[in-house]
Image (tube, rainbow, N blue to C red; front, side):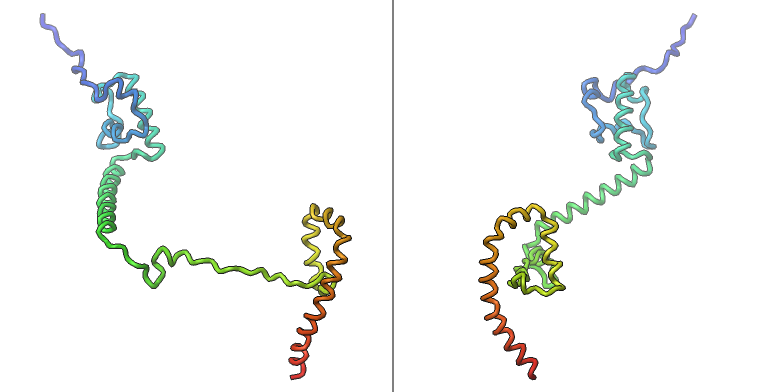
Amino acid sequence: MERTRRRGRRRRAPVFTPQEVATIDYKDVDRLRKLISDRGRIEPRRKTGLTAKDQRKIAREIKRARQVALLPYTAEHMRQTSRFRMVTRMAQRAMRAELDDAPPSEPEEGGAGLDAAAPEPAPVESPVAEVPVAEVPAAEAPAAEAPAVEAPVEEAPMEEAETDEPAVIESATTEPPAAEGADAAPDEENGDQ
């Protein structure tokens, strides 16, 4: 009697050795692409020649790479992506070649240069007037008191320094009248005209 051999096909040699499978991660896109069919499906064990355990690990890594968009889900996306990559690589090489060949140029008048993009800041002077507290008009007085309310920490040292303040105020009151007299004369001249 004749025996038939229908036990199945001969087992294929594995695509990766067990050591390589152990090192494959979802970031190894080039290796994982070898295990995806042209339609975007994961190749079965009978084609890859991997053990069941290794095939599960590879499938898990392919799915993880798809989730983080390192691998596409569909074959059409693969074709578009590969064309896009090829075009972008060619464009990047051309841009690098242009940049390397071009001599350094001066910035254009339109401000396209890097120096024109960052103008130097102009020095800012604070518009603080040297007017004593006693001479501040009533409309501006609440604005002057606002910082004292916001900063209660500063109030305690100011109370201790009250003995020094009258001397400062007296000296300040003696100087501004002379300045006011000089300022008042031009104002009066403007009023006479």
